[in-house]
Picture 1 (spheres, rainbow, N blue to C red):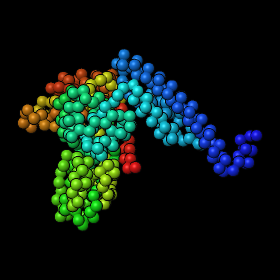
Picture 2: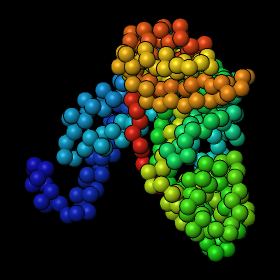
Picture 3: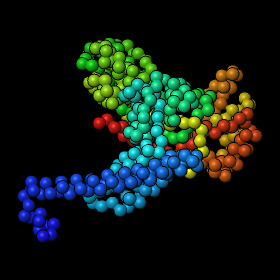
Picture 4: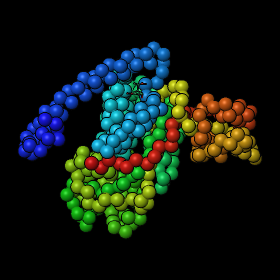
Length: 375
Ligand SMILES: C=C(O[C@@H]1C=C(C(=O)O)C=C[C@H]1O)C(=O)O
């Protein structure tokens, strides 16, 4: 009897039972195939170790997903293919190396969310108490990668991160942008009972207008992270924390007001750091540090070689030199691969005009804003 004819004679319960037997047998085959795939990934991992190649190759992953996406059907959309293969890639990368990733903790920070967005759940997370501690974990070899916040769309640069990248030997190897939706969290108090609001200084600043309007009399207490604020809120009834829903779940708090950030497009960029390594083929942005003489036209003389070669400067920031009054070093992000002939050419000219030019790292395509997973 054909499947169609059979479906007509089976009761709903019989149909479910029959299809479940089929699904179990398909799952069995999928598992066997996935194990086979993992075995090849392991071999690739060994070969990469022998040749010094990088485990994570986003270009190859994108190719695979694009090719599979083209064969998607009404029953399995390209979005489903992307989600399924993203988990498969996580598993595959995890047999190629153990990725300990240090992040600005404790559990429940936005940085933890960024870490999961970049590495998936295959990473072994190492929570650190400060941005400095994340850098120390990477330079000291306790973690292969680190994730730290570097820039917020409302409040600007997190200068400690920038200074550490400029002052240590670690490289930037990628970035993640997350939309930041702040919530006011409390153990069980209502808005009227709150006498103190704790949060990272950046978060307090990003919610200034809301706090002025809704909690004008409450003390604002800056603490080391939003997740630490959530820990305090779990212990102190009249203290509320600014943090995300992940922190609410983790510390057993209730959301007394969602989306309290002043700017709804509020987003934070996080850097993924590691010990220096060769740039990946699909890196499209290069990060530079320029130390210049304190003279008229110095900045112009290093920007011109880039403009002449049509290399866009996508970010520029200045930091005090610290060893000399009112002298600065400049952090630049340019839209070009670090090994591209035009950039190498420009760098040579820039080196003649500057005290020093250092390549700090490179990132792949500009990350799209991802929607924070509040599940
Ligand atoms: C297996 C590889 O390593 C990683 C995992 C991939 C995969 O599982 O298909 C693809 C690219 C890499 O990020 C590879 O380089 O082919």
